[in-house]
Structures are given as C-alpha cells and as structure tokens.
Length: 627
Image (cartoon, rainbow, N blue to C red):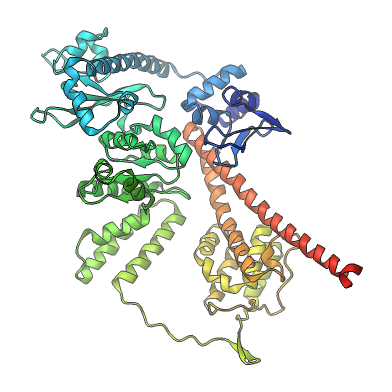
C-alpha cells in the first residue's frame, strides 16, 4: 500500500478538522478559529486552538500540535493506517488497495487476534479460580494493587500440558501459529505456558499479540521468564511492552522511561509512574528507538545497577549512536549497585525513583564515564586504548555535525584527563591608556577579510538574519568565543556565509576575552541592512540586553539549516515509511512554527523598544517636557 504525499494532502484538504476534534472536545468559536481547554493536559483557561484554514491544532500550554491524522493517532491512540482509513471513509476517498498477499496476511492476523484474545480471557479466569491461589499470593507479596492487576491483565496458566487446547475452540494449527502451543515431530502438541503467572503483551491499539509468563515454582525446570515466540502478530524487535499505556502518559508529561523487564514496568506503574516501557527479551533495537523518539526526543533508559544492566545500557548506546539526529538523544539513569527500579521503590520510596529519573545523565557523559572506568588506566598504552575506544564510538555516528561535536568534546575530555594542564602564557593586551584607564581595542582586519565581511553584511550572504548576526559580532567581538562552536558548525553548512564566519573566528583568536571595542575594517564598519530588526544592532541598547539578543539570533541562525535538512529528509522517505515520516514532519513543522514565532518575538521587542524611545523623544521636545 503506497500513500503518496499528494494523496495525504488531498485527504487533509477534504477533512474539516474542527468537525473531527469537535466529536470529543467542546469547541468555542474564536474569530476565524476555535478554542477549547486542551485535551492533552489539565487546564482551566483555554489555550488549545483549531484552525480549519491551515488544517492544524495547537496548544500554547503543552505545545501539542498536529493535523487530523495526528489527532486520531495521539488523542484516540489509533495506528497511522487506521486513522487514514477512518478519515478517508468520511471524505469519500478510496485508500490505495493493498496487494493480494498483504490482504491475505491481514486476514490471517485478524484470526490470530481472536486466538490471543480468547487465551487472555481464559488466563484471567484461571487466576481467580482455586488453582490460581499461588499466583494471587505472589502478586500480593509484590504489593500490586487490585487496580494494577486488572489493568495489566494478569492471569494464570495451569500446569497441565493440554489445558489451553481443551478450553479454547480453535484448531491446533492456529494455536501453534499464535505461539500458544508447541509442535514436536512425532508427538502431540502441548501448551507452551504451564504453571506460570501470565501477562498479555499488547500492540499500540491494546490488542493482545503475545504473552509473557513468570515461573512460580522455583524448583521447576525452564527459564524464570518465558515470552511468546515471534508470530505473524508479534515481532519482538518492533514491540515495546506497555507502549499503548505509556504513550498517552508520555504526551502529558513529556517523559518516557525504558526499564529492563515488564515486571519493572508494572512496579513503576504501581507506584504512579505510568510512562514506562520495556523491551521483550532483546537488547533495545533501532526500531524500538524510533518508536520511543516518536513520543519524546530524549527517552530515559533505566537499567539495573549490576554489570549486566550497565552492559545493556551500553548496547543501547551502541545502537543509538548511528541514529542520532538534531534534538534526539537518550538519557541514562545509573541505578544503585545491585538494585533494580522495583528494589529502589520498595526500599526508599517513589520519591527516590523520581530523584533518580530527574538526575539522568546525558548520552555523551555516560559514554565517557563507562569507557574511562572500563579498565585501569595505569600506562600510556592504557590511555591510548581509551582514546581508541572513544573514537570508535564517534565514527559510528552518521550525522556529520553531531559526529564532529562528539569528537571535539570527547577529545577535550581525554586531553584534560590524560595530560596535565598547560601553563597559560601571560596576556599582553592591545590598546591604549585613556584618562588613567586602559581601553581594549579589537584588531584591524586585512583588506581581503574586510571585503568578505562587508559583502556578508550588505547582502552577499543568505539573508537578513545572517547579515545581522555577522554585523552584530563585529560590533560585539567579545561574544565570538562564547558562540565559537555553534558558529563553526554553521559555517560548515552554509557555503555563502561560511568564509565570513571563519574570518570572524580567526579574528577572535587575537582578542582578549574582555574586549569591548568593535572590530575595525579599513574603510570603517558599514551600516547594517536597512530592514534589520535586532536590538543588538542599536547603539542605544543596554549591553546586557544586546548580548542576550545576539545569543538568541546566533541560536536561530544555527538551528535553521539543521531544521530545513531534517524536513527535507523526512519528506524524502515518505513513500517508504509514511507513518514515521509523517510523525517526523509534524514534529519538525511544529518546530518551524516555533522558530518563526521566536523571530517574530525578537521583532516585537525591537519595535516596542523603538516605540518607547520615540515616545520619550517626543515628550522631551514638547512644551510640557521643556518646562
């Protein structure tokens, strides 16, 4: 099934967004828009707006944003294709038909869903029966509330080898294909789960697709935890336990936590932390990382504090490094040695768990600490091995800007660790004595460099924002070192402005960090572009305000090419991954709106400041002011 961007645009055009949202949210007309209290977070004053002309909703409180498809996936929890089908039926459009093989697979999956749903109900019934007494006792010892037991669907599988097959009205072939029975050549099939506390594993729509079972008899043979095998319903590398419950909670508070196993996830939910998921017997996969990033940009990994847990965290880091992109990373919690999240909550309470989550380390910090502490560093060879391991991680990063930044940061940390600090040379300032004090002077630039900078200021670079930032850095050269890394990153991505930025960075190497005088050009500094709107270019702006305004402008300048590149990448992969590309597009378009809003806010501040100055000037020249 191929959904082209053009077909999706037609679907959005035929859909009245306010009608879709108005089915579950009470909307009030507000000019050309509609408003309401946001359904994604608790509020008393409406900050949620729906615009039919532009085809999107936006909450100014929690930043929820999207179109009709996003509404159905986020607010109602529908999978992407189900949301598309529902809107298409209402709009009178035909969804491009799947090929016959896809239709056959879909029909088979529907039948297997009947099997897993019936098995789940049977397991739940067995838990409440006399034979489920031991399982109920275990749940009570774990401290799970009755609400959590019901919500997570705990059940019990009896010890008999044929109990499930005798109870369910399905042929052995279907039970085997659903992973409920095991087929052995030359023998009768038998039930996979026996004498175990049972947990359903569900998809994004809450449908049961597989099971996990925990053994109750410590002396019994078999693994402590047993999961269903992979089936037409269940792909463990593409499934995260509890995602259908965690996703709505993550949208409420902007956080999602990854733990090692489903019992840890349930323990945290039992303590009131709902936004928790777990992989299913495998290391965190690339597909699972992408699932997490669709919810939040910085998921928190919370693995056990033993060596196995730390190795699991490093395997996850190894998987995520090639996938890193602007704004997307991981945070890692280091649990106390020998403890898992359930232990921490039972011994120290949920407040200790919240404190651990709030103090999660960044991916780069964790990478550095793990490799630094991996082996004793007692010789030059040991230290060289540390650097080699760090650089091997860096080379795995595919995004060029992130790779360069990781390389620089890790090299700096390695140098600080491996070598004693160098003795600083005394600084001999450039300047002159004026009235008993020393006035710092910035260097004069060569004619070639001056011409390059003048072209950038007068419009030879990309646009007004770039020109204004270059002019502002000439006026405030002491700010160049503060933004050196961001400016260097921008210079590599913009061939037009890059040479001018490089010249500024070279000039900054001759500056004292306390320099306040503008950088001089042979013919003097040209006037800024006529249509500039930035406070840092006004001579009357307070120096502190000018530095803050310039810092924000540099941030916007660096962010824009990364944002545009990410949007282009998402659009390019629409045909091969419509759901993922759509989610990324929505998130990036939201960031683009925020980008434009920040530019507009800078203009508003400048306009307000100019209006205040004009008013003060007018009052000062009036008869009343003269009196």
